[in-house]
Length: 501
Image (cartoon, rainbow, N blue to C red; front, side, top):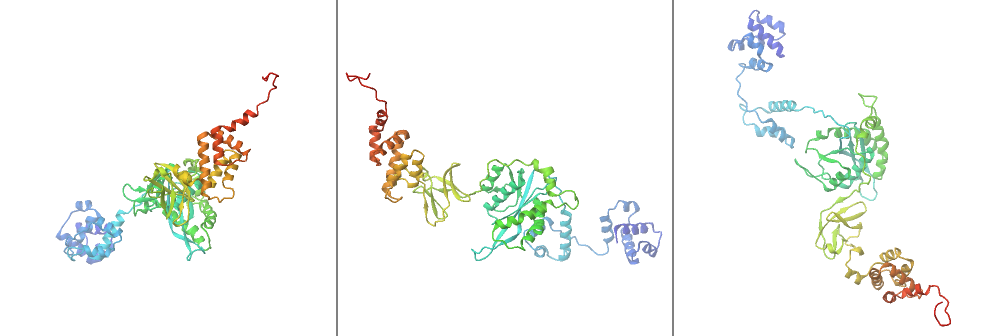
């Protein structure tokens, strides 16, 4: 019986003008119910004025009072119950911890019903007023796409990255090998290029590639912060276990799963690039699909007309995707160990801390915010990569410089210097220690006497086919190379007294 019918029955009882049967017929209720209401009224009478001021809950309480004896139940803290239930607890176990006896505590069925009512009263939809070009929401799909790789015993699983602009709902999708930081950054870079601009903030989940430590002031991954500085964006992680903070991308993940991933699962792929080639036409179709409630508009048309021009422009310099590693102390002899391979840094940094950055093909080493060394990544386990420029002068004098570095230095000077370097290694191995030391000594001569004088000395000694360090040094000391300039002077006629005319 609804509250209005209960109120009508009470009004008839207060007036006492009709029989119980007549009241029951008018309200279509059982006559015993009318008798029970009359008994309650006789024990606790009210007037019409009081009835008019009673709320629906007051009427329900009044009509149930006296039908049985009520014991005041112990009401749990529903907020605390909800918190424990969200943390993975089971409602029945929570009730067992609450329940003591049936007189003072609710049975499980009533406990669960009251908890559902509380959840319903506290659940409400929040509507955000999205601003064009303000933010992009990003996330990974739960579903993956299989990649057949014959180099591995089992197939690989490509992760699907999704980004959506909340205002226009313009969606971006790309497949990446995993959810690690390099793939995370690459996906962002490709997304901004796809949009042709950059929003002012990124709303992301709390995965380790984005957030190192969650909380009221989350700590952002250093590599992710570097991307934010490059593109001039804010990183805005959602609250833990609050998927509604990025509800649009959660909804987009479902749409992508139905429109794109479902079709991809029916195909065979042998690389992630093949998956991305298959995604492009499906993504174009998704963004061009008209909205159900707005058939004249699509994600693409809304993006082009209302949002694209409000995005920030892309930086002129491309973003270099890289992963920052933990700082390392430079040990003797001026090397750091990364992935069981030693890479050199300038010898003056021994004992100092450098920070490695791993890019696609090389290792960069930074000291005091400045890149001091670059090396190609080596797969040699237990090996060592050393740059001659990092050696000390004393070590170079003992070891010399490599054939490649010597040729590069000579090429920047003159052909005669190239010939001089080639003569040092003539009939010798490129790794000959004596030849490498000779080349280093020649570079020191050029540094001491200047490149111009050194080139003239090399040209002078080449005319005598003398290509040793000693010959070049003696020529520079005695300035023999200047004789050629004096000899080339125009000879004037001499008179009979032996004087120039």
